[in-house]
Image 1 (cartoon, rainbow, N blue to C red):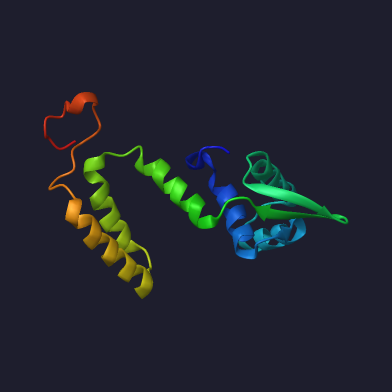
Image 2 (cartoon, one colour; image 1 turned 60 degrees about the vertical axis):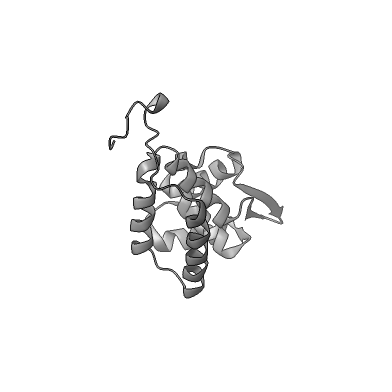
Length: 145
């Protein structure tokens, strides 16, 4: 499987439809995507082939139809893509980013309760500050990066 951060937005759109439906025929993927986008049938089939080649989808021929099923859970893929992004960022600023994300994204009360519990648990062992990891051997000497 390829690195998630390299998956183009168009392929994410295809995956979102397939995650929502579970297993779906190529014709139904095409119908759904053409309602949302101006993509042609051949473009959508190319995207499906790429996702199969990358290992994100599996296919099954059923009569004259091809059925597509995701090989990775949506939440797992979102987690991996997020971690790919976070791995490229300074450790010192990740907390601020997470706070901004929490302010921006819709969350259920259940999610917020779990988040509050996790925050309280992590606070017990959290350091006072998180050091910068941008330069080798901590050459930033405590400066903001």
